[in-house]
Length: 121
Image (cartoon, rainbow, N blue to C red; front, side, top):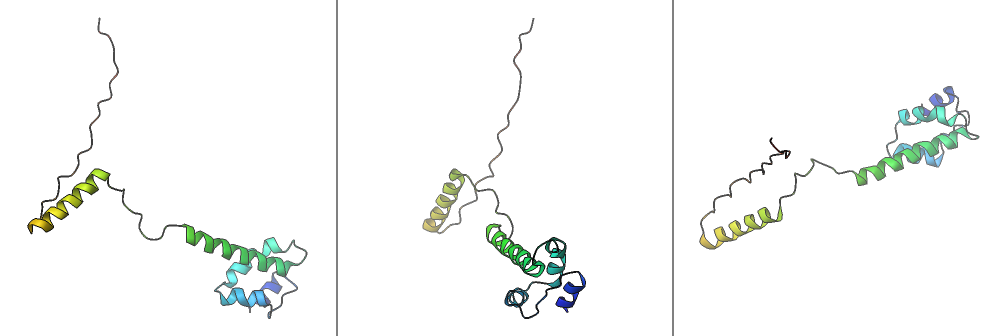
């Protein structure tokens, strides 16, 4: 079915038993991936081979990108070294005394007053 569609779009030298084609289809390449690349491939000397190269290259780039991109929710901002040390201290104190230690109060952001200096007459 894909080969007929490619022929109808102008890729004349389609070979349904081509190893690269069957490998790409076996790896999950969709007919839409091939059809979307036809306009680029039509200007090549061997349009079918060029089409296979386009689809193969795009799938390789997508796989490489998947390995580089972070998966899942983004991690929260890392805690400061002081806050991490304080949490460890509370955990150890709780383990030694057998009493849960209260959580430290949240750190308040530092307030900054931005002012310009000027002389009053």
